[in-house]
Length: 116
Image (cartoon, rainbow, N blue to C red; front, side, top):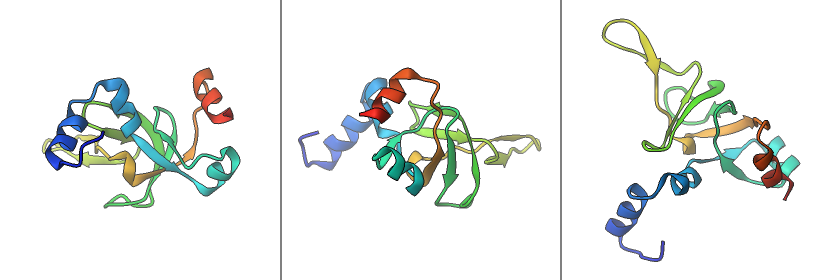
């Protein structure tokens, strides 16, 4: 993004294609992981283990259940909210408010990114 204008910045963010939005869903890695791989942050993926660092659920650690690219949110196991009928549903969390504590390394492409 080259422009400084806030309106154009917002438009570019919300109109971005999904493969570009995936880059916006980055989260810091724990100190241990950061030192191990030499990378400070990484896009959050399903089945990564994260710790929530901000908000009402601060300190909660859980596995990422779903990544919502269109809404720029993630669902974390154990972070729920009660609906009016009494049932629970996942509470959407922004990736900037979490820290990755364990990586899911089943994907070969992700392993290559970490080996760079």
